[in-house]
Length: 293
Ligand code: ADP
Ligand code: MG
Image (cartoon, rainbow, N blue to C red):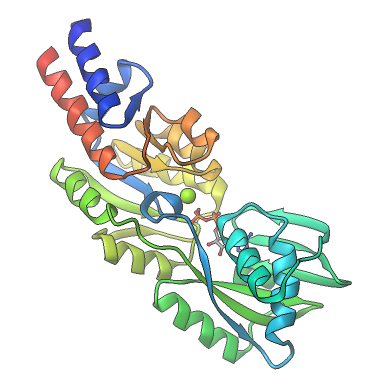
């Protein structure tokens, strides 16, 4: 390897908005054949909005927003921020919850106005043997079929509402997937979110393979499993949840708009959070190596 060619490669990378950790990173780009993409914040903007509230007969919309909003206000999860912001717009100032706990990959729990409140996945409610009644289950299925994330709300042992939140697919994602395919990489969408939502997003950007409902700590195992199948894996992610998977991957690409943990774990940083830079990075690295050989 001539040091000059590597310098040129990394310099051009900086111009394209790609930060490369070290020249040894370039070598990993040669053989990658699979690219695992985190959904929220990587393929989508990660900026969620609360779109609808479906309350059951045992709760008013205002109650749902007050209790769920107060609880989510204590969490930094993008879904939580969407719920808290939407709630504040409609019911005003939110109170501080007591005994708040964040359950990664599932949701939040705590006490608001004397009620024991749960907000999150159906699975979180199921752990407390709380089940969605048919009307809420229907609202959940319809929301998910439309590509929205459905969040369940329960308090005092009863399911009360389903909230619909959604973020938008980045307008550069579909083109980025096309470019990655042209480089010979098979894209896979990886998310903790529901399968129906993941499939709707995948269809929108042109991804055929989806691995959904994966718990945060299990993302790294998905990468290991693919590697055990003999694949060479590039992983693109933005969240704290993605850090271990980024480190495990043969090539870790972190969104510059993401968390510090992801950026530290990655080999490359896509400064502008534009997924097209992932394809640019791989193409540039391979071309740089081409001049070296
Ligand atoms: P992703 O892998 O898409 O970044 P996470 O692993 O953070 O998502 O979360 C997985 C799922 O858990 C979310 O889609 C949501 O249904 C639920 N969830 C997690 N945190 C919260 C929260 N604070 N409020 C509501 N739902 C949550
Ligand atoms: Mg993410």
